[in-house]
Image 1 (cartoon, rainbow, N blue to C red):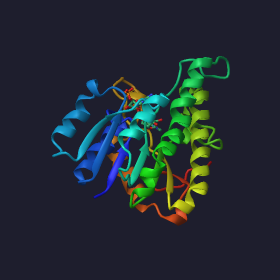
Image 2 (cartoon, rainbow, N blue to C red):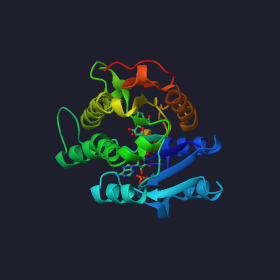
Image 3 (cartoon, helix red, strand yellow):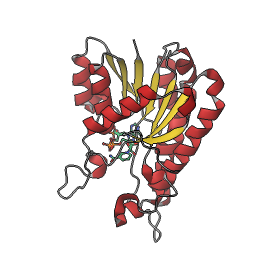
Length: 242
Ligand SMILES: NC(=O)c1ccc[n+]([C@@H]2O[C@H](COP(=O)([O-])OP(=O)(O)OC[C@H]3O[C@@H](n4cnc5c(N)ncnc54)[C@H](OP(=O)(O)O)[C@@H]3O)[C@@H](O)[C@H]2O)c1
């Protein structure tokens, strides 16, 4: 039985991943920062005959990560998906930077996935598949200037920096943990209809449903093998430039 841990599993892409893995009869550890308010995830757990567990995790809080590590000691994890993320503050352009907001964006999107991977390294080692996944973004590609094609996309300096840092950290783990058999995949989920892209707002141009994105992500994770560890792909399997 495959065990998958997903951060930010209460809504958006994370919830769609939890639902599809549960349908595929995997054991799912769905992490979210406020379980009391995670109704959709709790409904999934209630209908899962014990295969979906909801666990508290605020990825920006080291004590919360340590508490998850303690709760999961000796539990093998086959696939660890660092999905939780934020778009960052209003002010993150060439003209104006919200300093605290920038630091929080880096903490959630770039630092937390590394801290969580380190905290759960032994769990991954005990897993059969040993797959470490980061839901990144083509916004983290330094060579793609036209990201988002809009002022909104171009102005996301903190978000773009955080995803570039995430990619760099994951490349490092792909190299440094290869001897443990850990495989790393960095994925761009596409422009997905979630709260992050204002999917419920009129005029949102996000074109991919969370379900379709999750299906692609799960395929790309299933294909991951030692010769492609550390690569950056979109959910259709195309290589994304650094
Ligand atoms: N949607 C897109 O088009 C798109 C494109 C490229 C990349 N991505 C990436 O895909 C991932 C998922 O995004 P999404 O579109 O599904 O966004 P979303 O609907 O806004 O969901 C974000 C998730 O992250 C969680 N989260 C944020 N901060 C957290 C924290 N400190 N601790 C724990 N959980 C936290 C949220 O939990 P709460 O409910 O508690 O806030 C929520 O579950 C992100 O990493 C994002 O950067 C998305």
